[in-house]
Image 1 (cartoon, each protein chain N blue to C red):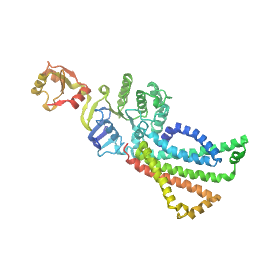
Image 2 (image 1 turned 180 degrees about the vertical axis):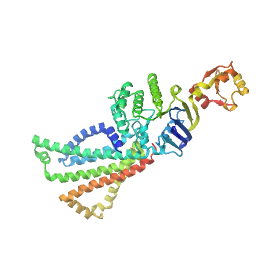
Image 3 (image 1 turned 135 degrees about the vertical axis):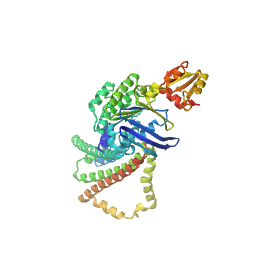
Image 4 (image 1 turned 45 degrees about the vertical axis):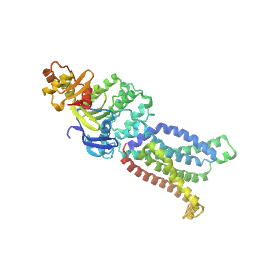
Length: 241
Length: 296
């Protein structure tokens, strides 16, 4: 698995460098646009998870690399686990870049003495640490879920066919349920367990609740990726290259 | 199985419109086996089946003693440390630099020899800073071959690996293949349409057509013993009537100016029919007579 992971990272290195630079600029734009540094690591985390999953899959079909890779001393299991390792690495890189971008923005606003709404928004505020951590970990969960949905499809169908199908899959999984729930009136308060959700959100406002929330998001993200990796493994082992 | 680096028995795989039908193929230690056939005959499919890149519908194959089906599983992947594979075009993402390709192989193979790779790429005129996309087809093949020669493989599986190489580069590669196979415990399976390459280095020629093995012969049996007789119609009738060539082996190709006749033993034929010119058989001639020739 380690070999496959290192090969993935070698192949993705140049693109990752571009992503880092681009990500830093995007995070600054988001931070300034939303007038808060809180969203910067969160946005980049989800963005890097998605770009990692899709970008890595794109290389598989270049010059039949996905086929040739299996002539190297790698098993299909190595390839799948290496891919998930690389996706997680890139997602975490996005988080780090977002945090660095947020710190740079806060430092720059302070150093340049920028006042007004932006100056106020980018003043270092210790009370924002918890919300930033939770929002970032929640976005990590979203990114991990998206990567978990798309990656098995890439392994089973290849990048070209999977990309043709993905919009339909995304709509079916993420849009149709919301539309159905909205039309059913359940979102107006009739969803069972809505009180529990409300209690959980309230609990997040406490330090202990925040830590539990972050831990839950990370655990759910890990679970989603683990289930997805198991599915990818089964699908890729049956795939004829 | 002793001494066989590749052994396939009855490999069968069915696709829409094409099937591999009971392919038998053996590559023994010390051999260069030339694998020939028309486009779409099943050469690449056979090679992919040997490498375990897809499940087969029947038969079995082993590479270096490991069942092909195991090669992509954790239990068999390590066997591929000793197998160098080159396909008919460079099979790496095109944004990679030549030096990156070396890094990828270094990560993949425990036995990777970075010094040998650097020396080979320099000798083959490959610039480490160029990307795969910037390489011509021939240069890409040189890069693939440099990789295959740099991890101490015991077995090379080459699918049209000399296609796109200029004559001088082909000569160099063929010399390296000869040197490679001269070491104990090594062998080469090489599919190619460039039969002159195989005439230079192959020990055995295996031909596949329409998914079936058509012949599997020592190369010398074709190029040293066989001949191609340039006959007129009357000559053909006379040869057929003489029984010098058994009826079942009588294969010929008609041309505008005469008939080419496959002669199993050109020296014996020349003694029996000194007035009929007999040329040395080439692999191309033998392929044409076998695949397209008529039988009486």
